[in-house]
Length: 256
Length: 256
Image (tube, rainbow over all chains, first blue to last red; front, side, top):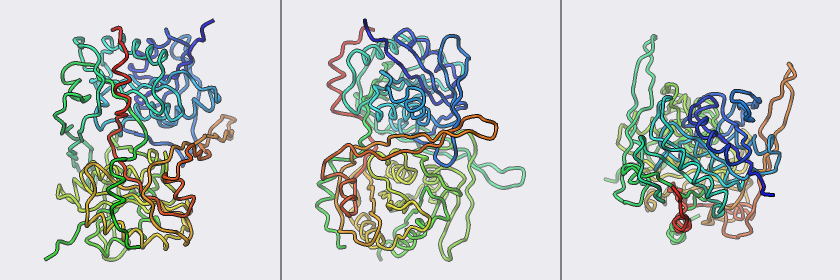
């Protein structure tokens, strides 16, 4: 008898976001689904974990027939609690994160709670995929993403992923996607433009805003693929060593 | 006349931590120092940014003769605000983060606010270094670290760093350090052990605890160097693409 895959579904937009509902509805056709998601939006939380205060994890029942938990912590906390307290060491066969309301291409992977949850899944040796759509609104239409989510999840369940590797999948908005491109992370950054205001007591405060700056003309990047209406798939690793820089540093003489 | 370097000092343990005082006292001999640090401890914040609420940035005067600001946000927010609102686009010549109370070797780089602040400095094209000591206590003794901090900071000011690269420097505890080793990030992870308790209303809550698992026998890793009483220096990049996995994924056939 074929083993029914156990699939962990997480996100950073919170347990009530439409994106996680869309993702859950696709992958529940592929196995037994457990959803563990933050009880409130956690966009931009990156790889944060909660160490200075305790965590809550409560089973809830908002979508019929789906095992679901809300967590008071970050997206990465959700994965850690799921592995340790729900799956109890029996690792899920797949971890999917998203579908994020907003792109996580280029440098966004570092800031993204969605992608950090998938990275944490990979650190736990679980084949992991983060999905994101180029639409920040709560009204985002995920319908054109679903066949890709299903296909990529099925391929990962069938083939596995290279060791210590996960996938970062981004979707352009709108129905006219031209297919999948395997890409590298674009060289890009945010140019910050803090919006300075005064509170009612005349003290300044700042809203973080900015413009995404693409500093990369390559046609093999996630940004290029998205700008040309492809679904971008970037394999991601969590060894951050700049291996090429080791010989440079070894050529330095430290007078100490 | 030689240009006086502008040096941004950040951390994740907060503006009153002894580690940032130790770091500031070393680098203020090398140039003009501006300290921007969280107003409260932000350990484990990773690369989190604050997007759902506004930020405060207030100049304070706790150490004589040093330009200092406390920030209500994360370590990465501190760097963004410093670059945008304090240096106003005139990039500092060096960004140093720490000295962290606790190691940031191996996989800890992903969870670390200290290292994420340094990564953000590097994203801003500022030569950046994160420093961490193997002592979590507020009473940590940083005295044996100082000559290394000075030497590494001077080398980076003199030589720069390869593009899109920063340094992750970790110190063993105690005075008997044997010198500097250039290393790669060790393959390691945390094995979580959530401490489950009941609140006064009999509802469960969880404290995140765990054990650092070194899954790497290499003698070229930061963990090996630290276990053998060397100062570890790992060059870090923020391109997270698993380039070696691109051909693997290109060999898959997506039926979509």
